[in-house]
Length: 394
Image 1 (spheres, rainbow, N blue to C red):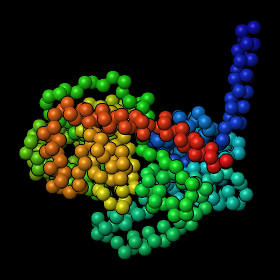
Image 2: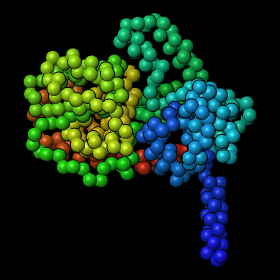
Image 3: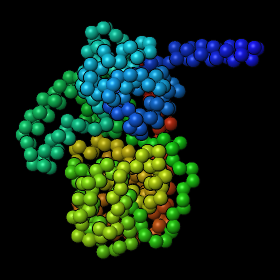
């Protein structure tokens, strides 16, 4: 009986301590524009893990039905996002201090409307990681379809988006260049760079042989916007056969189409389905060189590619283009192979890599890892983001 009473008393005290702790914490509603179960890197590592030490956070995912799920998080019916707050109100715990919306202007519009209608005091932040509206223009030019129509649509859309951005209290861009593009109204800002959770990296990595073939890996989207066909063509032109390229992507059909256009070396290229994040880093760590080639243009110059951090986190050297994020972090650090984004340049750089010893490749990967460990890991990021969010109430 005494033991039961002690356990009940302990649970009650523990519950009260949690309530007190939550009461002292700022409350954040975070809409990441991700499907429930997507296991997005920054969402899970930053908001569902490290920032929870400092704030009471409810993440709102998209899904089939609106409901409450584990860790006080919420799923909203993806077809009813424009009615965001009416959908989730009954699942919100206490008054909100901060609402952060990632990329979705429809949800942002509802958040701002709700705040004004009910004269609420919470701060509204917008996290921007990609120029979705501008992407449609770039795609239209690549496909040479409906260019004028897409441009007019972009002008209208961007005007409406700017009206909403004028109303937010702060911005969280993913890069310095993104901030220059979207922060037209001089809002307070901090960055959420694409980073990694060091806890997820493999503790023991199978030692790479210092002899044999060079193992390249490309992980991620294969589409026309990224002009991935150039990468396949460059590998197809190589005379040196001492390599393999493994591609892991959801767009395996298009990847195989690109593979079939290669002049030579098709047998050196393998196309696989996308890897679940639980086993992603263990797989990446077995390679020598990560491919992070994207066009250097207005659409991608603002990006902070997650693959840069993930490849280096797994101690691979990286082949990349000179987008500002890559240059800021890795130029002149003996960690990456930079190339222009054209067929001749990519082919030339591949030949340079194939003439490099594995010992040097692995040393370059170690150099990149040390940079990521200091500047691109979510545990460290959480500290400066915490300070920024708290400063909004100073």
